Image (tube, rainbow, N blue to C red; front, side, top):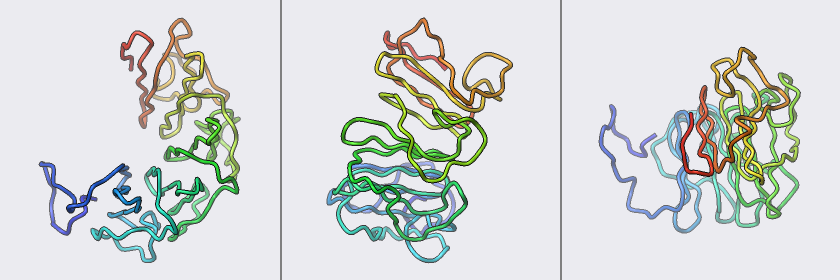
Length: 231
């Protein structure tokens, strides 16, 4: 995960080679980054193809992923990686929501108009060039889902300015500053109530206007219009 062949743990920051980097994303046991030339480089675990290369052995080698052209965005989840290339096309590799494994990048959308992508453990969302957000994955924790059943890799548009994906819940802030969350509430990650799930979504603290939200595995934090932080 640290990009070098040394044993044990590191309690101090170590520089990963001498390259310059634009973006980095870390998953369960692998890391991917975009360097200054737009190359997508991944290292760490590859048991389900999340490095975008053949073979299931982990690797500390900073070898570029076989993308045809430079990459502009990347996101990483537990067992998969997605990237948007310079033609605004969306590619993913690793183990998807239906437990299918791909060791090489494959385009997962016929559209060629993506600008940003967010990976969650059980679903992913991407923003297109029209600033629309589209999502795909398991319906539990999926904005607009009915709960529980599995969605094929078909994108569904949601109304949101920003979105964050947890393990089994998702939260969005829309254009009017409303905060909506969907999915599991088993740990109170959505609302202080005995309701264990909100498959069709619930508005959180409607008396407030929200700026941004971050969904963790089992908790949620958000910043309101007064820059106050709530968790």
